[in-house]
Image 1 (cartoon, one colour):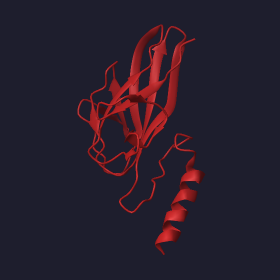
Image 2 (spheres, one colour):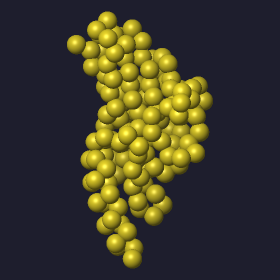
Image 3 (tube, rainbow, N blue to C red):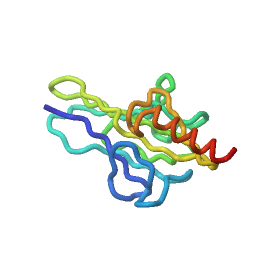
Amino acid sequence: MTTATPRASINSGAWQYGGITESSPAVPLAVSDTVDLSRDATIGVIAETYEIYSYPPTFPVPAGWTDVSGIFTFYGATPTQFTLTLWGKYLVRLKLTTSDGIVSSTALGMSIISPNGLEDTALLEEDQFGGWAAVMQRNWRVIEAGI
């Protein structure tokens, strides 16, 4: 059976999976970091589509991508690189068309902490970063420490 496993390379570094918060060990993601997307090799893939389905407000459509009703979409095996331009979360979906049907995964995301130490919560976020309740719990601690 074919599986969809998206991955990202931040600033041309090693491939990472899941909820990404660092570009390299102990270096938090930052505005101006670049992202390359790919997938683990699978058998029987006929077509693939990458989607940036949740992102910070005013994030522009990356070059080479198409805005499909607010979801930035790239059709093909090698998406064009894009730059993280705002603090917040960027969630990526990979859809593979295979001889068995369509397989998808929403397991990939990138998160940039705000200048004041807060984490974003993203529309349609699942468990890429421990779930939205865990994010809110961490945010309350940051807010309390600043009061």
